[in-house]
Image 1 (cartoon, helix red, strand yellow):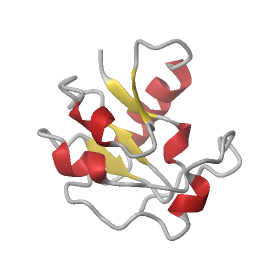
Image 2 (cartoon, one colour):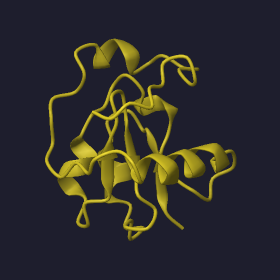
Image 3 (cartoon, helix red, strand yellow):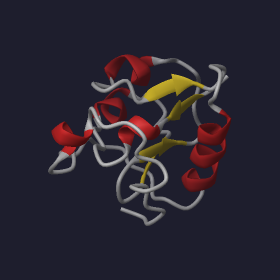
Length: 109
């Protein structure tokens, strides 16, 4: 099992999870974070810290696309090891659903 960042993170990019991760498994894109499944130790502390519940175990139903996306972008996006300020309109976007694919960006941070 590993944890994955899901659609809720898009356009928010809260980094509370980065601060508590003991193995620095997060990578940063323009509009969201992803978890490197090769680095994640399945401790779950990131899931608890995420203020918008954007992190889920890969064993939950419907996570297949997010497992693939996290693995793919963890290979190309830079690692993030320190918390940063959320995106300027994070609070507004935190409650928006169906953000993928329209608001997803494959660009690096």
